[in-house]
Length: 125
Image (cartoon, rainbow, N blue to C red; front, side, top):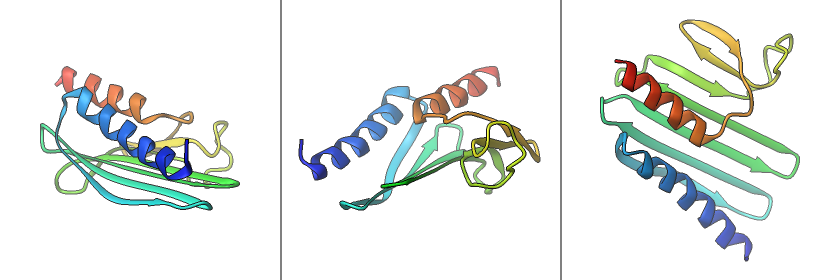
């Protein structure tokens, strides 16, 4: 498969996961770069309750960064999973999540796992 096709498949895969979950009312690809040296994907997915999930993934040869903030309409963060290289003392460094004004250990979470977590929390409401 050609490089460009692989990138397009990645976007389609993430969008497909979001659509299949049936918890999102709108999915918008904000930015997509697919070059030999870097791939960047940014998506805004509006949850049916009005909250928003942003998906950001950056892949380069020796570097991968992700951030999946789920927030209220007003911008208040409900949970944000990311791998920004701070909190070096955390045993799961660089993987962590922000929730309830705290920072907690996490793992390299996938978009599918994020969707499941949001769905579980919505079902509890």
